[in-house]
Length: 198
Image 1 (cartoon, rainbow, N blue to C red):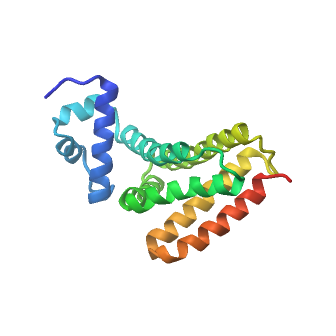
Image 2 (image 1 turned 180 degrees about the horizontal axis):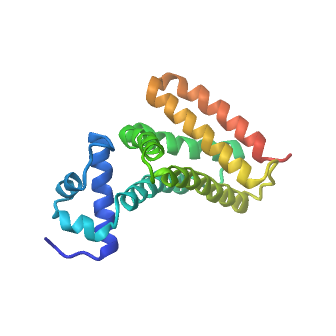
């Protein structure tokens, strides 16, 4: 087994945990199964992560980072705010369609954390990460497009996180691709109205 820097090893184990949890479910995923998925010894997992809480927090942070990176790379100022917002949501939705198991896992992680004594703060951290990600995206748009907001950034960030969360779960449950274009138009127009002060 090649020696890797500890940060790289943690990244490798986190990605292995995501694959194992998405496939087997959070409760059935063990440190042994994560080690097997990563092709390392069990001792490596215990060396890199002090606890299951620490591993799950790394999973939550990494999954959020996967799609936030996609959206950040997609959002560039377009002709209109609506076009810019639409591109961001299209990038996110492309990630949901390409990785439905990963997005399904986020909901399972929330429920798991809320039901396991001592893990509850992880669910809170998960939703704080969502709000932080939207805050970054809003700030990115404010700076690049000179936007003035109708609502405070923290309120808008939490609102967008809640809306995206609900739409994602709705899609994962119903799988209605045909409805997405109309939903995207509605969401885009609504968000543009919230963030653009004429």
